[in-house]
Length: 452
Image (tube, rainbow, N blue to C red; front, side):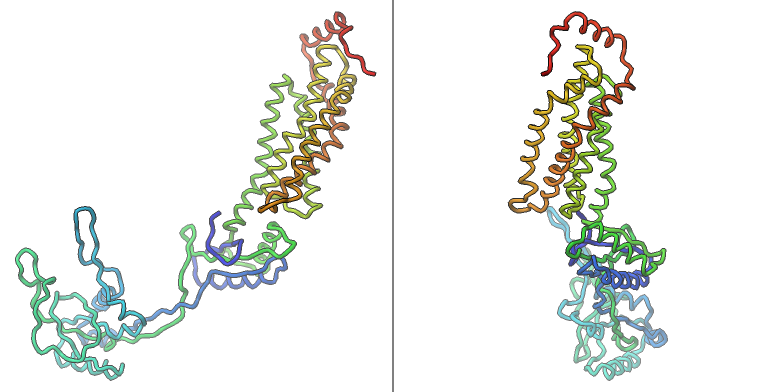
């Protein structure tokens, strides 16, 4: 359901535009959440166990050695960046050639002492002095090196123990592929980076997370025994209110917690949409705008029964329980449909009054209603008891169905006739219905059923 990988099930993500404020308030929120009895296993994804190295360049000394800040940046990027120096083509693909220092030489920040920067306009005496200074500072026998290469191109090498006494041959890679001549034959003096720079290490985050283009930190948590997800969400909000979080740090649920929150927000709309659809279908069936309300009047008793059953067994009204309520809407309204359909037929065909028609319908339809309700209860009983793997997911469904059916069965036979009679007084019967009722009562009275 989205979210970040964490050590706990539920997640609460903080976002901010300031990394310092985010780190401070994420730690405070985690400490406040640990004090909430509903939350356990509180943890954050902040990991401050990384190490970063700062290179502090003495600009005056670098200038005396004929170096600029751009030369230093190029040297470091050549060795530790992702500089593309060539592209190889074959019949199907192309491959980028990336310059980097040998990985065996970059296992620690000490490799910075082996980086050399190309110098322009520096005397050999100054180079020798700088090299001796770097050697005495680091305790390594590093001598100046003279390499042949492109002017202005940085080169990083491991420490050498001897100075080149003769001009080396030109690397074939530095020759023009069309003419074969060397791209540059001028000797370039290389200066150790440690001769004019200092190195320092400090702690830093191993990673920086982002969400919605903002800096983000996720606080994860689990629920203590006996607490529901809604209780955990309330506990997180209370912990956030206790610390007085500033407005530039904002929090929201993610992952499973956000999915549950979205489903809870959509539940009223889903139930309303189901009721509207049922009203339209029943209105077309009965050709009336009033009697569909009589059918819908049976649903509150079913909803109350489902909620009471869940509270009795200390279960959360989850999305599975909502599915049970939707099933109840279809099963419970069936009871009212059996009564109202028979009563309307008796009124229209035999001219009975509303009270007599609904009384006769209740007496004749009691057994079918009872049988279908018992069949539905027994069908949902295995879900409520909980057999097999994943039974804890299906239990709210069965309990909601059984609780709603029991409550509706006890109340429907009492409330439906009353609502039917009240709604029938508001219904305006047209002339065709009145004529049909009068003709049926005058011509075929012998076909009217008699109750004993």
